[in-house]
Length: 275
Image 1: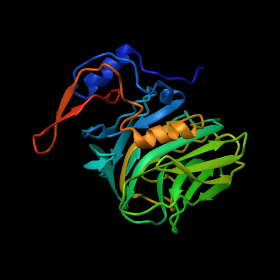
Image 2: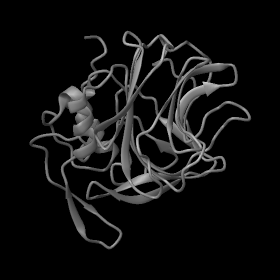
Image 3: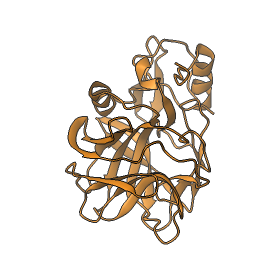
Image 4: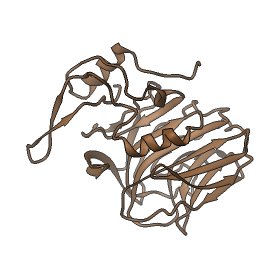
């Protein structure tokens, strides 16, 4: 159970203060979604300046690099704040994090609105000769999951351009399988014999990959990214796809009013990102 990271009451108060909300304490609605969490990045309704804060408790905060822009977004019926990438060189730089080293089970989830389909990387720890893992869109719109140097799996999930959708994959080295989801529904599966993720010195990046000449910068919007060192269940995938900020929601928390661009108040009962 060493991989379980569930914020304490004190951390919850820090979460609130970091985002300008009234501190309060309450149990999580979906505590199981924090099990094995090694990274969680979400706009949480407001810009976070020059960093994209990791609310998993692992402090893998990313630095906005080359100008990705905080942008109001609307998916799952909520007005939120995602990052817009220009498809040229925008990305979020998280550095040589060690949380993936030797991991044999992996889940990556994100809300995505690509401006167009084509070869582009959503995230990965994938440098020249230092490939750990990567998650990309191929030229034909299929999803590519790469584990290690040469083990890649292409999956057809019905991805579409210029529309918000929740996409995800799970990898299990025991089953040698990658499962791919769209909007909480399993769409495709494929074999991958990559084994455990190798320990490399490459940088973990969101919005492109470090590999020189193969960066594949992303063009569009990303929001609400979750990474786990376990394979989430189909039920958990459905929860993340359907419930707004599912991993951050708390019970019995104070009502917080967040002012939108028009000055209208919107009720939110959520947690933010750890500073």
